[in-house]
Image (cartoon, rainbow, N blue to C red; front, side, top):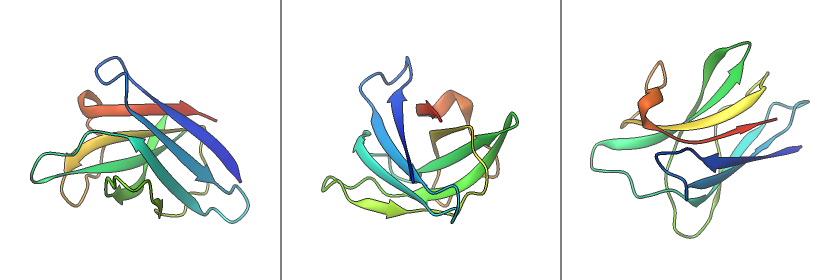
Length: 104
């Protein structure tokens, strides 16, 4: 299992999350350590980036108890990122609403 630290982008420099990704089993988990509470009707979504394309890794909740959350299994990844999307997620990331990113 690889540990991928996702650091805040310029618009949200204090944001942070950690992704745990098992390249063999494809199991993927996220641990949020500092993301602002999303506004009503919005939800955070994890993305895997592979060959320049974003792959939906699922939506997750921000939990102040630092709970490890399982998201979708991911086969391939070179990086992970989190965006703020409408509740339920999006088919493509809103790049202007990116909060954290981290390379493998």
